[in-house]
Length: 313
Ligand SMILES: O=CC(=O)O
Image (cartoon, rainbow, N blue to C red; front, side, top):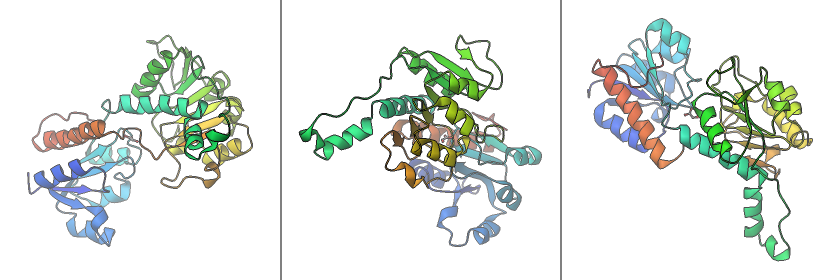
């Protein structure tokens, strides 16, 4: 397979990069001083694109690669890939579902605990020597809080199961009510936010879910409510989130994702009721290795005319 051209869009995982290098004719887009020129030069050799949550195959890239057969994403989210264009052109698309579910759900619970129990702030309290001058103030209990989940898919379910172990009642919003769960369903996000104390975004980003958390939802969640976003930044109207937090209309937020990564609104930096992570939901050594193997397995299956392991398109 050494002659098959594979375009990797950004650096994402050293093991994946090394394996792609061994198996294919690997083009690393980020190393090119002039990207459009680089793509033009190699367009006729590139048959696969490897991207991730930060960089996918948009319409422009797909149009520029006439021999493209497959886009294999090192991520579960595929909002950076023009799926309609791939369908139209018969380009296959794969992602890395399931293998990262546990890590992302673990992180969601970690964010809930970190925000309510002020883990980061109290860590800073110890490190800065303030403890010597007095005890840290009381925080808020997590166990038993009602957790509302937007999107009860694989990750949403995994968050629900974990939160249940903390005696948290679970409710959810999704496009349609699920028949196979006992969790309480609300037919709108505003109703969900009005009836929970912790609101978790765990749905895929699509045109319908962009800004699904808006001013009305944040006001419904209220000054004691906490927003956890382990989905995508554009699920939340970020300027509205910032003003809700700054004005005290929202109780707190645990964020792993942002509208314009890696830009994070600086107004949040001074808020002790906010925990900010750098989009690391699946970021463990173990999970990233399995994700890399899934990308490699999908490419291998495709180029050996075998069924794809995790086909999306
Ligand atoms: O954000 C990470 C992913 O989609 O896998």
